[in-house]
Figure (cartoon, rainbow, N blue to C red):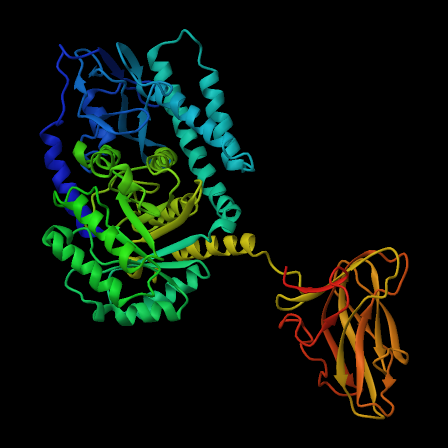
Length: 637
């Protein structure tokens, strides 16, 4: 949430001046690692320049961390000290460590880079050429991510960046100076960042479509105010349905009655609701019993809400020391009062931008025992790239979250960018953070959020009601993704109009099976009938004058083609009859194929009124009878 983000930056900035909470003395150290930094021209980056680069000048703060290379739990904050002569150094503790640091790549801006020595971490003396080693570690992760997505069809954007990055690394001689390694490493790192973004954003919707059989995707928006809620919900529905979810972020001052109209209106728009009775920045003001009672009140008032968030960005530094206990209480209330509803946990991506105890995976390990983790149905990770950059790290972040909560659904929680008052690490466009950069953040993370096994998606944009209404290009990001999902999960029907049609599967020999309906007619009147047909094979369109089908009034061979073709009977007279039978019959030998039939008609000659019922099959099989569904069936597939 915006208010908490601003407060969090100020807290961290002050804390960063105090150094890390954990230090390693030389006597304890298992070794020492020298870290060298070079720019894209191979020039030495001085310590001051390194800090200015990693911190984006005065926008950020020192963010170097040592983390566990597997679990990503924090080991030590601010380990880097200046090395006399060049670069930085850090002491290695008695466990393997990886170096985490925010770092820019061109043209995408800042991301979190984890240098982990090919996954093993650092356990003793070593020298790291930062950009060179980072490029190799990112290439390894990117290759693994690509191998895990065998159905991905790479775009030109991905292929160009990936192959060029690999070519740069592969061309570096074994014996070469450190400046050359640093220069070429940074160039390769830039390209791998582009390729990684492309992989996740391009494959994410494909995975969402593939996983739809086990649960439809979520496309989210956050509603944090009852002001003008109808307009916000109208827009959310128009951009996200049929996969729309809204997260109702309810302030502590509000009571259930205040939000009842919002809940009712969201439901009237067909939106699903994630309820959040306690915002993260309100939690410290509530006692444990008040927190629990608030869940009781809202759960009782709104049985129609689809999922409940037990805790908001629970590892945020602004939370009280009792957050974990309140979280467990809320889970119990949801399980008791809404046992059929989803229990949701919301975490905050911060690995190296807070004190170690609030680093996301450290907080999980310290506060969420396995039994409590097992009670959540869905784990969301909120992401503010302007406060804690992700970039190339996003894949590793979500996969590590999945490992920490085995068997659970995961997704993207809150997301936002470019809000007034935020201090930013620039992503995508430094010149236009509230315009082009915000759209680029949405364009990347909305589709990428799906690209993990078990991901529901989500993406509850903070300040949706403020950011989206006046920005058609931002709206198009969400609606375009929705359209792609709809097209893949529910492919466009081949029907001529609507979704339903009749499908004739015709064998090589006539079997005289039928699809028909009885039609009421005026005696001694001329009539004409017909159908639109598309595809291969042939059936007979026949008009019968008696229920025994011995008196044939009209007959025409019905064939289609690559496009819809109009088939019409000759004019026929009803005679003394008040009813006749309109029928399709697989009456021909050597006419095998698959024929689609739609939009039939049966009229008095010279009139336009259609006497057929359910002529376009949009009511399924209503009014129609088939004698063999393996030959004739009515379908929307």
